[in-house]
Image 1: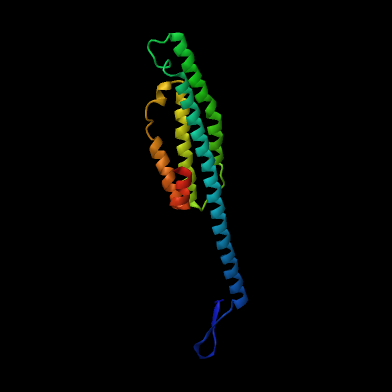
Image 2 (image 1 turned 30 degrees about the vertical axis):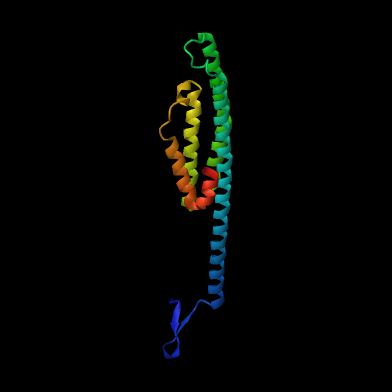
Amino acid sequence: MPDVVTGGRGHQVSRVPTRTRVLVVAVLALLAVGDVQARRLEVDGLLERARQGQATVAFADRRVAATVQYASPQLTSPTAPVAVRADLQALVRREAAGQVPALQRRRDQAAGTPVAPWHRATLRARAAYVRHLDARLARLEAATTDLSTLYVRRPGLDERLQDARDAFTAVAGRARAGAVLG
């Protein structure tokens, strides 16, 4: 049966009552408003996780750098006794290893930030930030066995951070993304 019937003089009359149409429009509007609110909360949560993650990255970097500074110049001096150099290298490696669990927790928290599956830009931002933390973790973990990794530029580290900045800018704007990711 058609949903529209023809009334007199060529007028079409819908069989769907006006109240039903208004109710459907109201429900759709509420869903749209709720989705905007949910997206805002997701982005706020992701920004907070990134702020915490970046604070942990900075803390780990400072701790390892301070330990390297404390151990220098004997850490790399060819005239320092081998046993002294080995002990200082072990000290730096232990410090790097000690920073891994906190950074791993922040990475897992960022990865676990809830995002609706249809909020693709926010999902991309979350994934980009997790990749950035994965690269930072890999650098720290590498330093636990090879201190030379602290003195060379790790391929992809800067690029991963830039990818995260770009993805965060897309969902949160340049100011908010820059405040968290620099």
